[in-house]
Image 1 (spheres, rainbow, N blue to C red):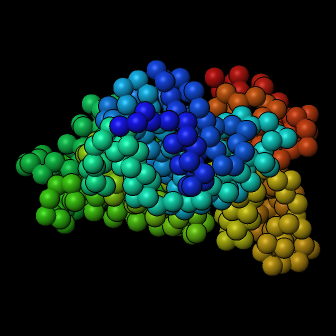
Image 2 (cartoon, rainbow, N blue to C red):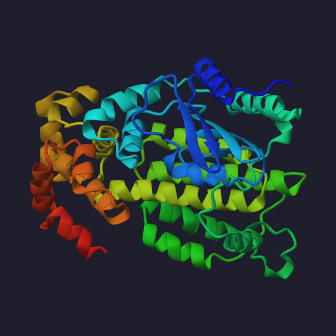
Image 3 (spheres, rainbow, N blue to C red):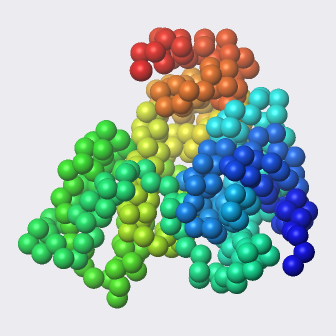
Length: 399
């Protein structure tokens, strides 16, 4: 067999699929080809997990539901991705640009380029992996030979995940299981926490949740766990909607979680995904609660602002999106919420800034740019007006 020209092969794959392709040697990237210009490589947060995969052919579905495929050949690795089933929204791509520290002047180009990557079904990516593996290793794999194993992210340690799995899903719990009434009560307690966006109490609930023995709804254990996940995700998404989350956002997120669960093949990965799902929905509702979005109008306004966090949102923009006149919207909003809409827009952005200051190490300038402020000094003035502290001091207080 002729020597394989890896750069030619990878470049051809990228051109045909529009998906970025990389070659690594001894863990170091030696080639990157993308049919669209990318100022930052979206693989950065996931690179280590992909390269450390034990299987020589595998894939990763990230927390944001992007697909990456990898084929190993001795000290060489070919990584293809990202692609995804459903295109990212502009707001999601701007958040990705923020996470990757894309400079302000490069954000629009990055968003445009990422949006130009053609969405592909996961099976299409797996077919490419099978083909590349055959060309390199001479091995003929089928789609059902590929399984997600150690590429799956684990929010908790494997030991903690297995313990949680035994508590919730083990069919041999016997006398340790609670009765049907108690199981219903546990379920309702969880949904109440999601509905209220109570992140702190949710963590306490996760730590003390009693073992629950679900009824049998599938012929085998793995199918049982996936069915339970689907039911739980459906209930949690409804609770989040009742808590004020936008219906479209909640349902789209639910579909993505369920599709990802269907690709999993181990108990602990499903449990981890379920815990992450519940935390995610609860956090989404908490953001709404932080803004005091009590009425339907306030929830619609908040949804619009959050979808345009990177834009300099104006009152007239919100009015046009809601098909209301500017004066009517301003008057009604002030009457319902007790706050001017302009001030509320700033409050939503500042609440997001507080979250980013607490949970990321991004610079004040990066956060300012991401949230659509005209300058860092403007961001600091607005932040102080809302919270009483400048961003830098707020971050130090929360450390």
